[in-house]
Length: 216
Ligand code: MD3
Ligand code: FE
Image 1 (cartoon, protein in one colour):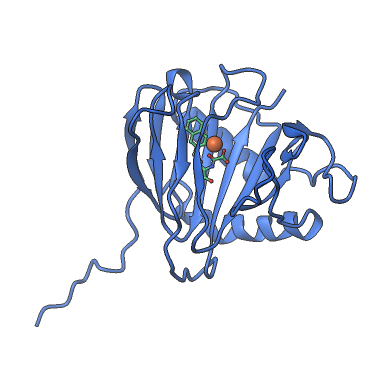
Image 2 (cartoon, protein in one colour):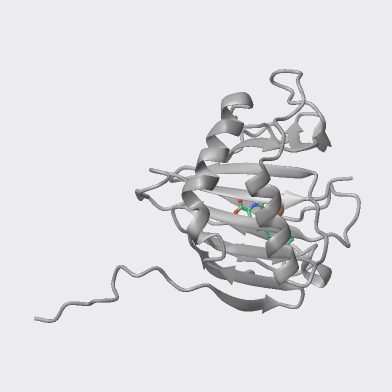
């Protein structure tokens, strides 16, 4: 009988190139998950998570909210960024300082100086939820990267090429992982596979993803 003394040690932070323009900062936010979850709770107390409708009339399985100057929304009229939460008619909650700082540090680490996002989309996946392959192209300046932070249950992230038909690669994203997508990777098709059942000590039966964007 041997004891695995390392079984419960967290993975150390590491930097892995994914494809040209994209870098995975493994465990970059691992020490901040509890604090980030508290900030998410404050945001969604003001702007509740909701299942938005696609322009085609489907209910998204991912529940969403936003903070920052602009929020990403979808309904029968289309996809867009807007200054107000359509549920309340009020501006989205401000971006917590911990979010802004984390996003800027991650972007810096990936070679993007002075990243100042004006939008943060909060995605919540429960087991069974998924996001089908899409491009993020509602932002004005494609020279600005997108920073993505994963929290809670692990997910299989998929990313393909510049055409939807290209067979996607799969990658496991865990709590605290941060990915920066810029340059030639900025418009790649990507999505998230069906979330598996599980329980996470800090998020419960959920995965959260924060995506930081420059909308305008
Ligand atoms: C690759 N969210 O909200 S984040 C989204 O995990 C979205 O919730 C996923 O895709 C999630 O739009 C994936 C990773 C991500 C974000 C933006 C990208 C990957 C990207 C933009 C270009 C290429
Ligand atoms: Fe996306």
